[in-house]
Length: 405
Image (cartoon, rainbow, N blue to C red; front, side):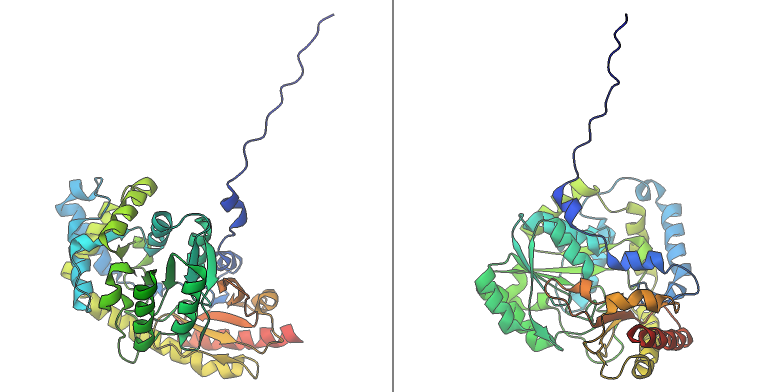
């Protein structure tokens, strides 16, 4: 009689890290996947208008770089970034009122990577991070993955309240405040110069890092530019300024940067070495060549004029599209506006019904670190033409009316 060995068994693999199990995906990305049908008028994405990309100028920059310096363009580069691009970025930053040297800049793979690097360099699990209410979604993800405790700073229609900020700093002892003070995502609002000065003062007196994210600031349609928080002398040693080409040149380049005090910038460079070694060389050199050969400011001005027309088209149709008793922001630039419906509306629950009318928005609830406003929603106004916006708002009004009924 032959005795056979029992059938081999397969042991389970170890579980995912706790942060991977607890931090969800981006609701915006999920909505875009559901609404990818071409007939859907999508106000949900934060996508620049592709027909406004300077395709010719960007293509020429890549052709010139690959023709003139192929060995450099296709080779590894330094973690901090290509000197030509860092020099150009420093000059642009200095011209806008914040004296900056090339060595103050770290080039990142999109400004989203800058958030991840800062979280790695600054945060221990359990550290407290203060954010606006509501807040940019991917920042909540980045800080959540770092194990941070995220606390929302109360505010109003003008943005975060500096007095409430100081109270929270004293009580919660946070490591940093994250803010998008100009044309904020998701609300489109802009923090006043007076409040920026007050925020800088709180950081200086109470000991706080400020991460000032500025992806939209150049897309101004009206009004006067408000200086960066980073330009306030008393807080310059504790403000990190983030920038990006995604909204003014092209998001597919994945080019961002951070301007930070030396010790923190060096720590972020070490974190970047562990993440991706460096941002793609050819993209950096092409962007530097574009800045040298083309007038980016003139291009951004043309984009802003089109975006203003699209914002105006959305503002003109909201009263008819949204239920009586709704209110909304009127951004002076950027890509988004924020609406609140009457309290009886839950925009998360209503979204599937609205999508059946071939239009989409982002519900407001995921943008909150604390108790959400479930009657709120974000609308992106830059990707569609005024005619498409008019039709999209008509569909939105039908969907919202059906949803309540």
